[in-house]
Length: 424
Image (cartoon, rainbow, N blue to C red; front, side, top):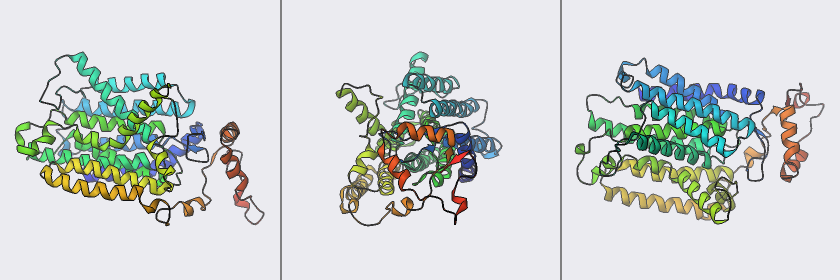
């Protein structure tokens, strides 16, 4: 049932992404090329709309499955729709930001609103994962919940800097997280495998996989803030619903670790985004700047600076995510000594891939074919011209790319724009 929902979410997202791209073009939700960006042409950035549609359709289908009847009971149904409603709020917020480039205070207020809505629907941290501490104050529980959700949303948003990076990282990490929650559910309720966390994670992985073919380099559309905040919120919601739901008595010895610390895996899944966000905040504060001030020192920028191609940098960051996430998930099934040995092996392999000779030579996952494919996103004439003219002075490479592009010829009349709606 979970695999079916994952496939449905992937198929719906894949099929509706062209619609989301069309909406982005019509509403001018276009990503202009800024000094810190890697892409070289203005690109539609409303992929989060297709991801939201995929989530809604999959959850509606799940609500009709007898297998998941307990998840949609009177006690848990508000939590399900709380997560879906929060996702809709941040999608609308991201849409507004993609169109009007909102200031950080407005975005933060919208994120708090979405997180607060989820919390009021019952998605709250009540039992802390350390020593079974219970938060007795409802206000403290609400504040901690909102903080966790906002951090998760911004962590994913920070790492969304290369084509396919955020979607792939969350898909890989979400798969490990799903296996984790499914394994814990098997052990805690052997007669009923229905789980709200497993449901939302399966759906989230599906929408990421469905969106990735449109977003991998060279991307035809970005997920934008509408997508990055959405999957960050769903990830946080799944982690919160797991916390305190697994009785510690079901595990003994070293295997009690994932029972006492159910937030271990979400942290491992978001390790790269959280590390990137933490380093960015420290770096900017040390320089006397706002923690939200943009720069070109993110992890993905550093990967490119090491000499990796766009695609290779993304795949290597996928590998690091898999090492962290699956190592944490493995604690459910294997002893920590075995997990530690294999984690060390894969960390060494990941380091070799990151720092080895592959970054300077070879055609493995090079961008040459993609760069020569001639595929460039179409943007509305009014918006595209304004965006390009506004950034030419700051980003000379945009002008060079435009001048070097092949001009339409009489032999290829279809290469020239047929309407005033689009430009190449």
